[in-house]
Image 1: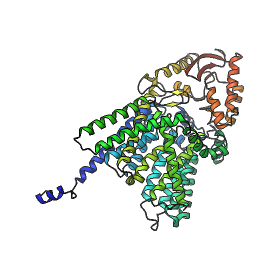
Image 2: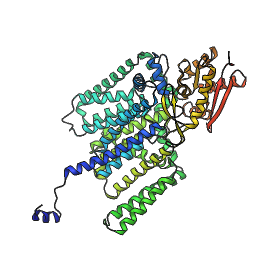
Image 3: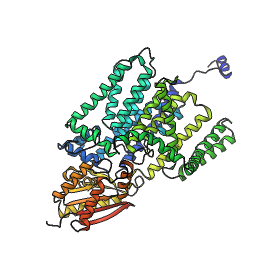
Image 4: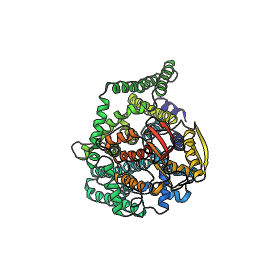
Length: 608
């Protein structure tokens, strides 16, 4: 640089920047964040082998053997995730290690989607990495989240729909869009519908509304193409199952809502969701704990922001940063595993609801929304409505929409969030990411009565003939190994039935009796349970593993059946009556958690 240029630059004029170096730094930081999240996701998946595991593998095995998902297996779920697992089963069988690869593929697409969105954050390199981690980790904050589960599919489809819509937000209304865009969006909505119907339906509504607002002159064409592409995608997927459309409709779109309280309750669930959030926040204890968490986020952020203004060499800056770091670490470590995310969740959901209402009023032309990308908030809002339909209006655990909200906030409104507000928001992302990681290291997966041991602790690598090497908790391996050893010694007889999930079948390598893979309380119809009891009357299997969970039956009755008994209670009475009258013999019983009792039952004497 010449002397004149140096003097000019020293006077505050713009200086030529090492553009390549800046881009490389930005890419490296975000790449490190993505790689770290991917590694954490792989570890989380490997440590999530719980007593409801193996369900998808067993369904895939039965479908590969010719069973139809609806006519034969009476499944209430949509077919795409079953087909994915069937494809993977055809390639690898039940091998546990190779099954991790199928989850890692979903994880890779998930990471890529969030990474591409985070790249559009109009802040610095560190901020983009923090936004990525805060958003991607928040989306998997639910205790039972797994990349083995269909929810990871629907979350990933929503991310890619958001990416396509972000591209379209740059197109001027008068220019319009070519037909390929609504077709691509419709296909993604169809894939989401074929994974979980309420997610796909609400996503299609959100995309239709956004395109209506952005391109009003093409609204009819875009709406028709969206609907046609989504419908065609679902039809093709149903055909691939080898089942009929009538059976598909009967067991999914007709019967599934009844398991969630009926169509009326499903429709009212979004309103119930808002009421549930309001009732929680109306409690003084909730407000007090929320204030503590808010202080743990805001105070360190403000201290650090003020210190940044005092110069790099300032002792005051160093001391304030240290104080802020100590306060944040104390809050992260002392609060319960899911305490911070659980307390922040309802407030952030209210933010999402407010932004969704703002965007909806823009679509209806009640308000003039100048920021076109604000319409993107309808995508996570659609996911929230869909999740509320499945939860019976309960907000707890609905973290999936939170991830999209957190990544879209800086993407959509980033230029308006400056100074101290930006620091506070980033501190919130750090707090969420850190507490979720710590919580999942301590308890990788928890659902109902299942609570797994900390990551890589209290586990052992066992070898099964059908699954090969498998990482399993010692206690679980002990329970089910005893079951398998007894059956091996005395013979399978008429088979093994495991209720409500067939982990015993999976662990022992025995096909589920009469194809009853799962009979869980809100995913199995009353007619299926009645059919099971009739089959038990005709000729029961030799062996039954029954997990008795009366409190969970009661919770399902209150949430989805207006407090009235569901058929699973009749099944419990049936099984318990046979035990009490001596017709069936309990070989062994144990309890893994309060309210969860396991019974290993033989229905006929040895040799009979």
